[in-house]
Length: 166
Image 1 (cartoon, rainbow, N blue to C red):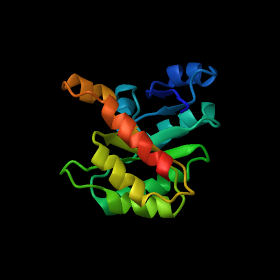
Image 2 (image 1 turned 45 degrees about the vertical axis):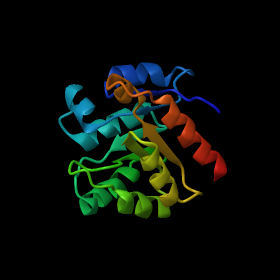
Image 3 (image 1 turned 90 degrees about the horizontal axis):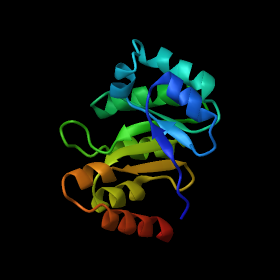
Image 4 (image 1 turned 90 degrees about the vertical axis):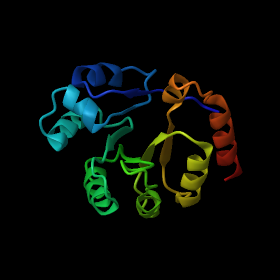
């Protein structure tokens, strides 16, 4: 297994700094982090980041809550650069699994970062939907699990074992 380090941040100066460091393999951000970093316009701020980070993978998240609008946003975000991964929540704010969104985007070879994964069952469902030829990241939220007293290691181990069977 190879470990990759991704900075979860939206601060432009920090991204610019760590983009030059070989220890960092890529970046991931979200609308909340961008707002905290002073972004007034999501696309403009993303494009500013992409001017300094144009080779390493970077994930930009959709902010819609319904599948149709998620897809619209995902296709737009995907067009921003070859190193862009579209970040899709595994469930929306109503707790609905976004499988149809994941499947359509993956079928169209959109690079995905499926986020806020908390269970082995979610990982299993995601893996069934992914196009084997498209690039994908599944972001398992170990820290938040641990904060709630749940040991994330068994979920990681079981999830990794599934990827080895593919």
